[in-house]
Image (cartoon, rainbow, N blue to C red; front, side, top):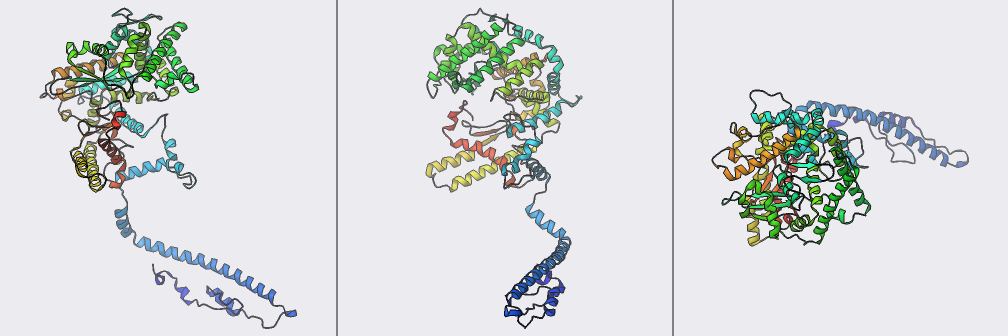
Length: 632
């Protein structure tokens, strides 16, 4: 605003007036001040004794006090007048201001308002940012959200997904829902029934041990298909593989156009801790961890029940002994590990899946992708005392089924998870545990149920693809402008980016009627939760191999892979296929908070995830640090 517009009219009458004093520059700032100056007459006669200094000091003090008083008084009146005038102008131009400024600079879409609300919840505005900026920015997070140990943004994304799964699973069944959704709801309700699971706890274990032909007599653990020979542990491992319980190794079956199974890439699942914990067991921290681990084993055996404390102690010592031997073998093996496996150990591995695949296993290549030397690990197990090796495999199996048992085992499991760092996620709420199990075991069917129930917006898929194209465009612009890559190198970079694809792990056939019902037709659930879990795992194993060997590419059901879980919540770059894989489970806040009608600069969270995976395409060595060398 200009001075003529903003200055009150009565100020125009005010004239500067110089008071006759030794201070010639002092000015009167108001009518009151002018009057004071006009009425003031300086004395021309000298003070007694001829000393004028006290009068001058008194005069200056009076002028200063008067000036300050008048300035403050005038400022208050002027500020009030200016404020009223400013507010009047703002009100008269409110619509114009809002239309121009808000449309130009602010985003007030539903998505932006939701994002702003979330950001405000995460902040603690009671804190001065100049004193503690972190608390100011993030202080509200811990207050508004229950943050468990090891909580990450990815974990929060997973919780948001599980909350939607819970909503679907708790909707009353109707005649329009699919048979597969009904089976999932039956599975979920069985999981949520804590009372029944506790009552059936002992029965569950008895039936499960009978199913895998395992006898526990409180002293010696023996797999009854064979006597306790050096191959008993191998036979038990083989049987457990049918139920996707991986105790020693974890296989990845690779197919090709020439063969349903051309190669088996094998990762290792042991030892329980990093080798350095066993190799330096006397260190305070390591000793503490191993003590907790032993107690966990003994407490679990006590619930079986294995009543003799001495026998429980021996069992736990057998487990620690095997893991220590494995850790020693790893330390003494080659670095980096040799992917080749000796013929003797290759035969041992092929025997694990002979009952599933048959004699065709003889023609299949076996290769290690273990970050440790798999050959040394297998040799250690073959040379171990048979009873110790079998007890170790039994424990590895028990540690995986404990979460599916009753409340006693669940309490033990939760305590173990809280005491031992880095052992995975433990959910305090039963609904979280059961929803996550639905996500893990019924991934594709659970996604379809979310889609059918309106809990997942299919537009997010297209938005993710559009974001991928946007990041690709920026990659191309960046590579075209860089100077350190020239000639053929720059050409290869640009070609790789141009050909790069994105995969969201959703088969096109999922939208066809009844295709998932056909895929899950042979799945049968029990009135016992543990056995239902095992039935689901065994069903998925059989479905996988049946589809590999007998699948028809023209059949919609054959295109359904139950192993491909769109709700996995993982992302990776496939080096061989030049493809970025993004799990649908990641398209939830806060990882993919930025979706919908919002400016591009607010989509950096979404873009950063895509860009991170795309950069893996230009790292020739990073993938070697991962256990999976075909995709990372």
